[in-house]
Image (cartoon, rainbow, N blue to C red; front, side):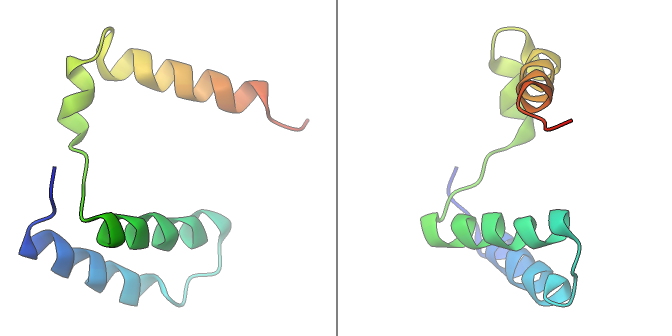
Length: 72
């Protein structure tokens, strides 16, 4: 879905707030937010329920993939 003016404002505000964070997960977020601004798109999490198995199945697959490639 295209970003609204409100979405763009919220992303910019979030990027400003996160600019001082140093944790890994926080450093990944600004990149994703910048990509959203650049592409002018967003995905509503509710759309995942339209997929076969819905959000639960998507999360199971995502977590399974992460665990499969995790370094122990």
